[in-house]
Image (tube, rainbow, N blue to C red; front, side, top):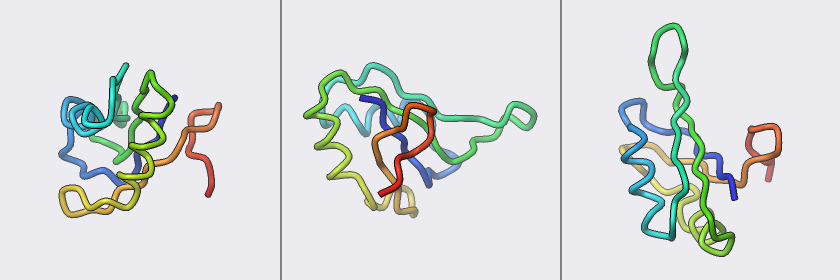
Amino acid sequence: MNIYVGSLNFKMNEADLKELFEGYGEVGSAKIIFDKYSGKSKGFGFVEMENEADAVKAIETLTNRELNGRPIRVVESRNDGGPRRS
């Protein structure tokens, strides 16, 4: 399952994001989106988890959890890459 993670602290890196989700199951990939001109984080990313049950548990547990001073948004990603509206 592909998961959208928003409201990330701009200093967070992909290894941190992967480590956060590994507590819930196997992570296939973790990617933070960066601005191609400035190289700075855009404050969101995507995590791919192999097991859907693990992904659902991660979404339920991490949604609105404060991380580095910011409550993060965690939802299943839509097919076009954006977050699903809840």
